Image (cartoon, rainbow, N blue to C red):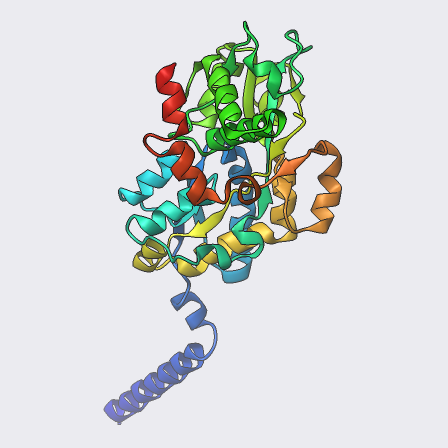
Length: 347
């Protein structure tokens, strides 16, 4: 009898365990069993976005955790835009590329098919969630009286700007000066002479925009820095020195573009979070962070209105209007043997 009672008790206990397991299987257990492992993204960007993405990455990680339950860490890589594009082509494992110009992102299509040719159609506003422009930063009080592009070719003026062979920002700088001279003096030939004189006054060609900022702000070289608008306004905040920002009479509308690096995200299994990472740049929070970091919000009317007062109203032209797009501009001005090589070799 004792043995039989023991058998019955064990059987009952087993049945209870099975029933309990089945109950848990239909309720809380899968929440833990199916919890997503942490994920890491690499954002390969250009120099002046460092501060922007430090703040944005923290906001996105919080948003993604609340939405998906998954922890995400975003690593940042910064440098000259052209150099960064080359690093991805050479194997840098970027999930997203947030480069200074669409031409650098197009290079990822042409050199290895790292992303689809229609990448710029996958996000609003030609995949540019924020815009910027090119301005002139001078020492406090503007001791050299610099007011416009014309002043940069005067004798005794030392100019700081990065190298357009490696820096996307430097290409915007170069083209802004070129178009100013072309409109004022009437021809591309005159513009070429003007830009040659300007680069004759350049004392240091750093590889990226942040390097030029450091040369100007920390090393105290140069009378004027040709800079991204956001970089110019961050000078005092980041480097603790006093500078004035000069808005030239004509400048270029810079539209930094963002893209998922298809080859890498498909290999790593990070497509979903990488796509959401870029889409969130267009959210109200993403647009507000852009404005806070002196980028011009592109789509949020609320953010555009909020930050309008911090940006001067400028006469801006686009790369398509003045130069027929980046492919044409790159070939004529920045490819080997192009206008930049011609004027800078002569120097």
